[in-house]
Length: 117
Image (cartoon, rainbow, N blue to C red):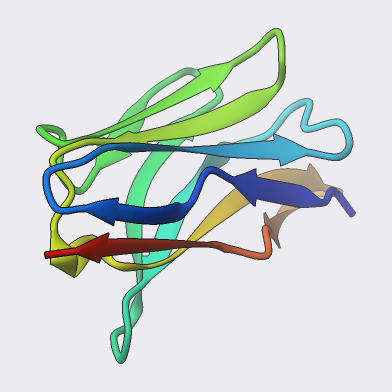
């Protein structure tokens, strides 16, 4: 199973920016969709942004977040700007990879984002 390793989280003041990275340990050839979820304190895990192999994207806040993928480096990014206290949470990278006739979702371990107001 592919391991996903996130980085780039940290403590930032409100209004600041962070760029999260997600690097898979193995091949993600043929992936269906990759993206980012976040889990806020006491809240559910919610989808923040996703990107398909055809580069179609979804985004919970296109004015502040941007998802992208470096196909040469095989790294997934989430650029976050104008961060707010409510963006605080653990951000998880995921990848849906083909397995047989179906797909399997791999998760990263999460990276903490803390926005101070």
